[in-house]
Length: 385
Ligand SMILES: Cc1ncc(COP(=O)(O)O)c(C=O)c1O
Image (cartoon, rainbow, N blue to C red):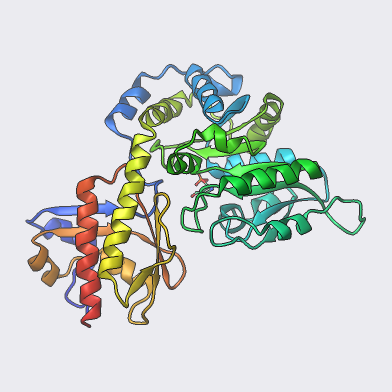
């Protein structure tokens, strides 16, 4: 691709542009900015010191999330990573114990091995299937009772739902039920990394608690599909939450007047599931359009778009994933002439041949049209190189 004539960066372009300029950010559902209603709620939030458990807005959010997730109690924490780590620390509380996770899970790939690094827990990693599940027989085989002096003792199974690196897939309910039954039979616990659990609930058209009845604890990110600027919750029994509270403090996650954050989370939750239905529809529309425009360049990696994620797999050697991302974030003079506007798309490359696009509540119907226009132009341009 000849990019010699293209300006070097967006800033330069924005300055020189006379025509309409549009930026659509599809890198993640974490990139959203709090809307007016959220900012208003943050400004008006009643707060207190949450380490003393005196913040009324946090208490209200925790109560609401516990109900939503069908658990006795919940705890507000700064991030999904901390929520998962707290669950692992509380559940795997003996030396020489292990937890079972999928090889494409966020915990295995993107949390710095913190369960080993910080909690001293051995992660037993087994392959994820393409739909985000684990092979049931392999899972059964992986469970160690600890009777054999050579083995770790399995205390926990973690499942991710929806499954990020498996394309935003919703784990089938039958699978969740089967795993939970197995865990109970073996006297071990199940934790859901439910960073995007509400996307699963919206996608299936069932209440979140219908899904979480198949786990002991669940984490949920409010800074993703809910659109809040910061925060996650972890939910479980009241006894578990008492232990989680101690863990949170040890990890430096005790926040003070964090009701300002919880207030924004509340506003985001008020708008669900409408916003996420919209995100899912947008993802399907973009995927369909790319499918139509992309012959020989990229293909949609996963057969079916179930939630708000699209993974594109490059099927040509003409361009790498990072170069295609860079091209989508540039505007060539020819493109400016042809489209009569400047469209910058931000997306992420995952390895050399995969691109991830994530729709989110800051992406409008009009943005989706722009994304389609941009992809159609750029894919056509690559075909003619
Ligand atoms: C599935 C999943 N779990 C956990 C996390 C961690 O969340 P946080 O970035 O809030 O630590 C992410 C973040 O992208 C995620 O995708």
